[in-house]
Image (cartoon, rainbow, N blue to C red; front, side, top):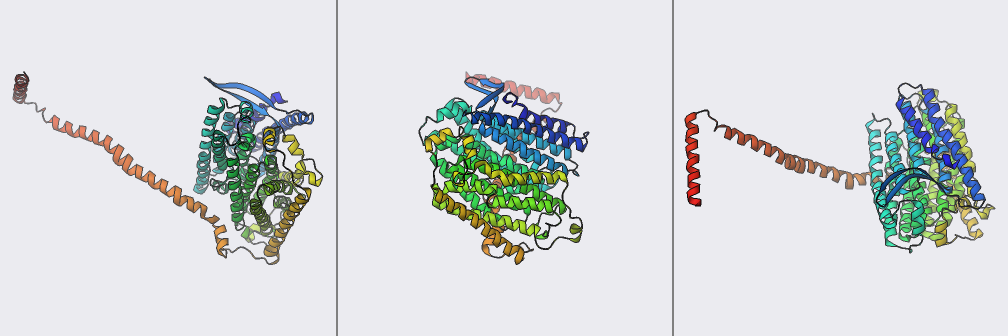
Length: 639
């Protein structure tokens, strides 16, 4: 099966070509079958690859396979091949990308069936999956970078899918530009890696890097640049504002980008390059600081948002902050564990939100919802599972994943743990706030909306049910020893992080301390759920309809702490003013002035010289005599 690994990314590419080229002639039913079918086959192949890797791990082998496809670039000492890497990390990512991707494709058949760009949408989805698979399978930084850039391009196409709406087109452009800032860091890091190690293959870089001293300056610079790239792709401070605006795209796009694919690319890249970061403790400290600030800020913003998709968007930013916290304290397995569980419950929540929006006639404001649990029972039950999971209430998946990261943070820095713990409290509150505002109380929409309320079709509800099951049981992948587990995921991924563990040693904590921290986390999550229930169900204290929340902190949160306005003031406006200056002064008055001035001077001088051509023979003889006299005078005086 490993020999057929190239088929996994190739199949979505074929789907993209068929649906893209035949978008005007293929019927929607066939487009949906092709678009979803190629991803399903890729998922089945991924299952086969994973089973081989798992069998190898059970036998105690490292399970690291490189499959060359073709030699791509050879110039001097630079030799780059398009080759694919199969190991425990990439095998697990294959299941997430193709499995969640397939469910989102199936969901899209029902969600987008009335859209005129149905075939184009599925072709973009297939292309997105292709580039994401290339990113996680690449055996070197160049192939990873191609996938990295590809998902950025596809996010632009998908976020701005309804490009006739200027606001949606602007959101797509914002995502594209902010990602390019991070991508520049990736590109410079690739140059430095080649200059340092003489190769871009992981197999040549990581063993050599493991022999370098801790705190090496070159590794520090490389890892900082790679982290800049990760802040763009995974929406961390200061490059996080594009992700909430990405809600402009269709809801399946939100689920695809925010759950299992694009935003986790930065986490995957750092996890893949773990030894480089382990040897750069300053970079790890920066990662922890940025991660905790992002997690807290985004959670504080989500508390007051009224757009159901915006709540989930800021939730994604916050959850990504927790993943970076895990990476920063060396909990690489814990961070990846949260990537896996987050893929389950966040895809579920976004698709559930899409089901609500579908039933509400494209309404996204939770203040105009309420009482939907009777009309949308499947959507309600599945979103309830997703909410419990992300809130960190046991025994669902989010409890195990987030708790593992917080345990490592507690062992590393108590103050950061306190901030992370408060952020987790916010998470439980705003998620149950969203659930209660949407599904409980009285319906607050229009009579026409209430008349048309209905559960979504099976193509939309079946993926919700599957994801709800995964969100419920996903935590069993890595149950800690304190709860009778064997850290199955950690053991499976051990070869990927072996060099880092050799440098830092195994993380240990007393079981009694673990029990206390787990109990505190679970109890606080339950308490926040009860607080939200009391405020939004019992007291029915709804958010104000005039977009004016009470209190200074609430207003700051509602207006997203004016981060976008700050960026507009210190970045966008000065750059616009500078561009206007260059246009008017440098370009128009300077460059155009010189070019136009030369042409005008030639024209004007031509007008004067033209007067000498009078057509009078006597004038010509006179001028000839004058010229001869001047030449004679020159000869006499020069002699």
